[in-house]
Amino acid sequence: SGVKVTEGDMKHDIAVDGVFVFVGLLPNTVFLSETPIELDEVGLIKTNNRLETSMHGVFASGDVRSGATMQIASAVGEGASAALAIREYLDEFDRAA
Image (tube, rainbow, N blue to C red; front, side, top):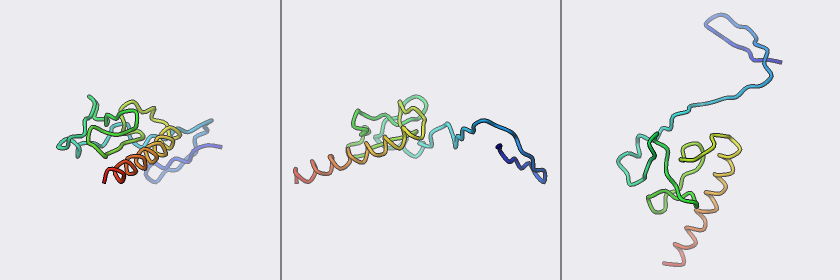
């Protein structure tokens, strides 16, 4: 087994034992610079232990979060944790109303 590589009009196979795909290693968080959401020195979003950002009611998870492991399984798990935290937040919000 291997990877099929296309370079221009040329195609060839490379034999490999594994493939690790990285879409990007730098966070795309520039749009947050004008918001109350705190970023770390490399632009990752700071969160508390409930995955809530410094902006009340805004949550972050996965590779864009400061302290993330940059692993797919972790990002998926954090997404589920964030969803539960959001549900708790909304339940608290409803009780306060």
